[in-house]
Image (cartoon, rainbow, N blue to C red; front, side):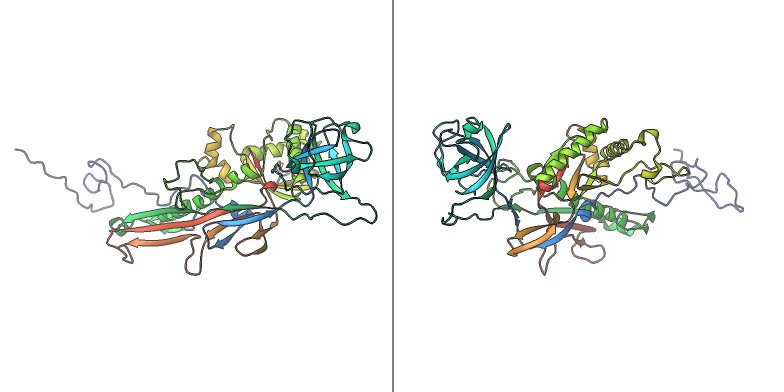
Length: 483
């Protein structure tokens, strides 16, 4: 039997490459030189984190309950939708208010009110002579409590003024009128409000490294998003896990939705401990806010028309003057093209006065904001909608259902906090996290295992991350989701 001896290596007397004075780190002895190891980690994706949106537009507050409850004020003035009933008594049946909420018997129209009655073709001023009127004809149900008798000032009845049976009308109370020596009002109107709730969810993550790997230090120069710059070993991976979890905390507040009561995500008991989800920003705006489609970048007049329609909707709501727009790249460029086309010199490619450029500098065709009517819009790119590793990848897959951005009102809103029992002014968006004097679950981290401080017999180090939070969207009627 032949025995093959192992190759021998020896140190050379001079710094010269010979057949037997080098070490091979791969198979065989064919490689003459040690590899040139680039110890600095290459950053090929730029800044990878997407968190920061909520920090710009909202705030964070602690809470000590399983849910947050808040109330939003109703409208100050009385405006309802309805339909014309029998002509003989000039009856109008009120069905829903201007926001589409069922009125039933809770409308605030009273005898003595002066109102404006408007249909698609007519607008007339009327006097309310009776409430709880009875319908004799018409397609509506004969419910007396939601009917009023409106006498036109310029005609005997509504049919004399030109209204037809079942005409859809809007009723606006603008004042009242009484005879001399009469008694005061019969009944009073109470302020209306709407109650909303949201429930926090628990988010978790973990990083783990074995004790053996922790003892084998391989230095790598890194520059991570979590501030771990310099030479690190396994802390680089821990920092990436922390950064990813921080992004999850924000992405959950944006994307989360409540589970439907029929969803199989609920347990068989369907109790408070079941997975129930929470209402994120997109879900809140789809349910209670405004939605808009457009800004295609093809037709500037069409794009501007979308903003005009948006302004008309904002006029119906809070009419907040300053608004921030967080949009994806395609929408940002389309808005730049739209605004540039509004300038008479835009087609020529230069506009030194408007763009504050001169002949020796690159032409700036980007806009950070503009004013339309009485509203100011400030535009900013939202990395979350552009990054292919996050919502940008979803938008690329389903262009028809893509989310282009959001319009967020600037400033604060006044709401009644049922936990504190008083009115508070808060940003329209803010995150609530669970906390008490002894425990804060805003961003909780702890270490377990036998590496470093020994807490168990596990031959590893585990870094745990936990947060319990929910998003409160106040005044969603002042927001707009760009689909």
